[in-house]
Image (cartoon, rainbow, N blue to C red; front, side):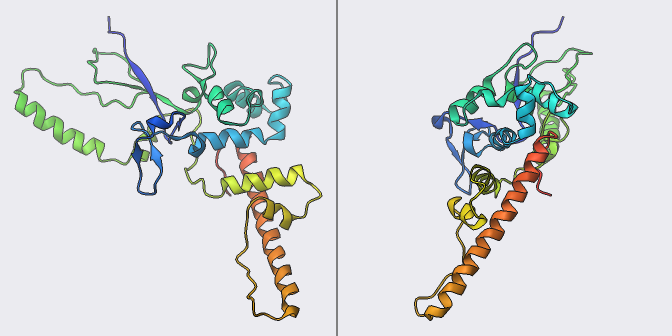
Length: 267
């Protein structure tokens, strides 16, 4: 009989970390992360996935109906993600959602959705024992070999196997939902424009952009004639309106993507 296995969960993208004390490492761009690769919760791609799913009116209707609806994909997302509207839209709510679980969602929501099971230490495998779902390298070591020769061959094998990039390795292991990429630039501003516009339908697009914190590079020099100021003001408003329109359209595409279980869709 094989021994009881010890497992942990890993993620293709940086999972959220909620304890500031764990963010002890620093990347070249200044981002702080944990030794296990986690980042501050608000900078995790999984947090933004959760936020954008909350903006789907179609998914909100499915949640209100207890998971019922005509769209099979949205019903499946409900079964996996649960009712995201049961939680507050803040750190406390997101943290509670990631830790939620039931008989099927194990060991918790975020691991079930985005993680894959792996060993948390080197273990001896028994002949014929299954190890599906782990990122383990299974070797057969002849115990009659000399220790020096074993170490030499192990070093050669590990150098070759560990040389592959992190992202390339993760592609070999299935997860239920995997981010299409980790480029989060523009996701926040697009979401702000989207929510501001929906909350204020009578507000002009340039005002939406301004309230969203978008600023224009179109400036007016102090020595310009009074007659030119009005033109430059119009240029600024036009720039802001166009930028807000693009961001709103982008948010719509991202929301349509999460309704299909894809994130973040940009095209």
